[in-house]
Length: 362
Picture 1 (tube, rainbow, N blue to C red):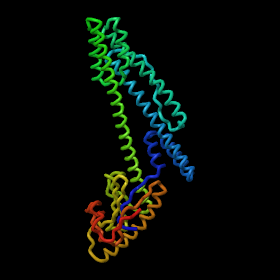
Picture 2: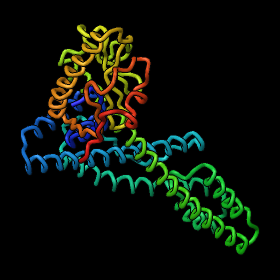
Picture 3: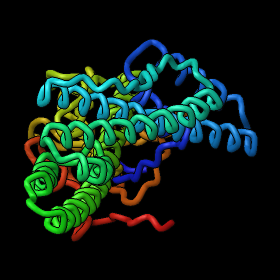
Picture 4: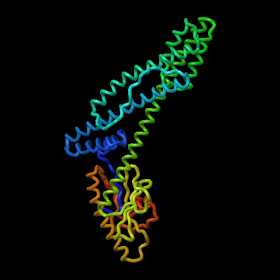
């Protein structure tokens, strides 16, 4: 082992799944209960049985995401109804299904059944809202009877979540239909309404895809942050159990930018700085003040060996918590004098021009 290391951390799939479920279920009591139940069940599984259980967890997580998508769609249509009331003073009598509030007790089958039922209800509601809005606009424009039915039918194809700018362009064309002085002119303007409705539909679909991509990216970032916090919290707890004081100089539990500082009461002159960047953990022992004698350097070597033993013990404990470390670089104890704490972690863990350093081959 070494007094300086770089390791890639690979989280166990069960930990990743449980963190994802925690985020999706929210901070309620049900979230903690469900995650604890999942992890306990996985802990009892071995080999193929565990893989099967994990697949079930991942399937459940996907079902949760589907429910979240439906809840968002329900809210979006509810916003359309509210906006219509505000802008037109008209209440559209279109029933919407209620959102599903997670309790953590729903099983996979219940979630799938709910999604299927809500899909039908939402499709029906979306069509009804579009038809009601088409009739509302046609009546407000006082369109002649011989043109009103055709105009209302075309306007009913305008999707409820059409952007205001596109909706305005469609309405401007619809107004020309209402003002047309001849049937031929009205038919030409109705064609323009159709074209604008089609363009608006394409824009809606593009915006939906953009929002979907944005939501996926936000979910990825949230998951990465949850994993980072889990790693830092688990590393902190593990080394505290091994007798280290962690983050002695920090004011918050989660260190700034992934930094951890490990000290011991019997180490007045040494400390270990850790840095987590993405999934890479770097650790390096350093001095808090310059070495003044050979005795200081001898004690440094002793501390380095102690740290090596502690790191090996920590690796085993961390693995039980789903943190697997693959060493990619190490610096042997005594290879160089310990750097001062004022030096950055990056500077003290450079991999070039150093004696007795080894890149680990996999």
